[in-house]
Length: 127
Length: 283
Image (cartoon, rainbow over all chains, first blue to last red; front, side, top):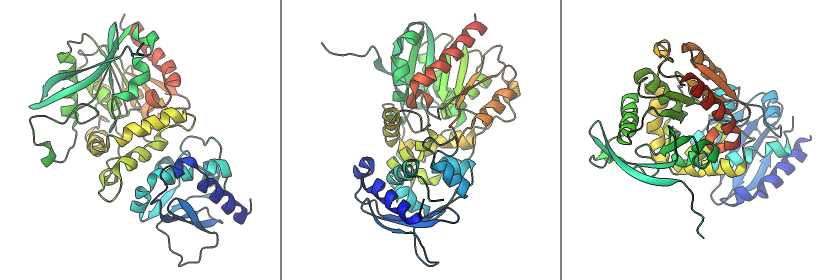
C-alpha cells in the first residue's frame, strides 16, 4: 500500500472511531511509528489526526516512538494477531518492539492510543 | 417480578497481622467450597459468570472475595494506612486467605486464583497443603518479574486509565468486546492498589527454589494458562508445573491473563477439566 494512501486511510479510521470519539478531548500528542523503511509521525490534537508526517526530517519532533522490525508491524496488522503480537505491551515484553522517548506522554494518552494502535488490524500497514 | 441473581454478598470481619479487615464476598452454590481470588488491582466481579454458572454451583459453593483494599473490602479499619506505601507481601497475603477461610469455617476448600491470585495459590500449596483440598493457579508462575512499575501510580497520568489500558493486551483479541471492556472498567477502579499488589506478584513471590517441596499428594496443583498471556506466558507456567512433583499444566487456547473475566465460555471448559481431575485425585 502506498504510504500516502495508508496515511489517509488511518486518519479516516481514527477520526471516525466511536470509542476514541467518546473520550477525544485532550487526546493530544505526537508519536513516531518506525517500521523500518516506512516512518510516520502522527500528530493528534483533541482526538483528531492533525497531521500525518509521512516523510519526517531528522529534527522533526515527537513525544514518543514505537520501533520494531517490518515483520513485527505486519504481524500487528493481522485481523487477529498471533499471541505476543496483540499489543504494545505484549510485543515490548516478548518481541522486538521498543517504546522510546517520553513514554509518560504515552501513558497519559494510553486509553485512546491503545484503541488507535489496534486500528492497524483494519487498515493494515504500509510495508 | 424483580430479576434477582442467586448470588448474595456479605461482609465478614477478620484479623490479619493486627489489621482489622471487613471483607466483602459474593457467594452462590452448594457442595465443595471453591474460593476465588481476583487479579491484582481488581475485584470479585471478575468471577461474575462463574458465580451464576448453574452447572458449577450445583456441586460447588463458589465464594469470590475482595482482597483488602479492593472492591468493597476496605483498607484496615484500625490503621492509618494512608501514611504508608502499600506493598503486599506473600506472608500477609497467605495469612489473609487462611483467616478468611477460617472465618467462614470452610472445610477442605479448593482455592483458585488468577495472576497474583495464581501465584498465591502456589504459596498456599507449599505452606498449607492440608488446609486446601487442591489449588488451581491460573496464569501463574514460580516467578513473575517485571511488572512492579512506577507508572501504575504516577501523579502525572490518569492512573485509572493507565492501569486499565495497561492490562488491555493481557487479554486475547478473540475475547468478546463486552467482557474485555467490563474487565477494563473493573481495572479503572483498582489503580490505587495495583502497584502494591504487584510488589507481591513481581518482587516478593519467588518460588523457583521451592517448587520441589510442594506435596501434591496432600494438595493437588492444577495450573492453567492462556496462550495470549504475555506476562506469564504458557512456557513459564508449563516450566513451573514441571518443577512441582505431580503438578499438572493445562494450556488454554485463544485466551489471555484474565480468562474467567474476558471469556468465561472458553474458560469454563478448562475449569471443568481441572475440577474433574481434582475430583478424581481427592476421591
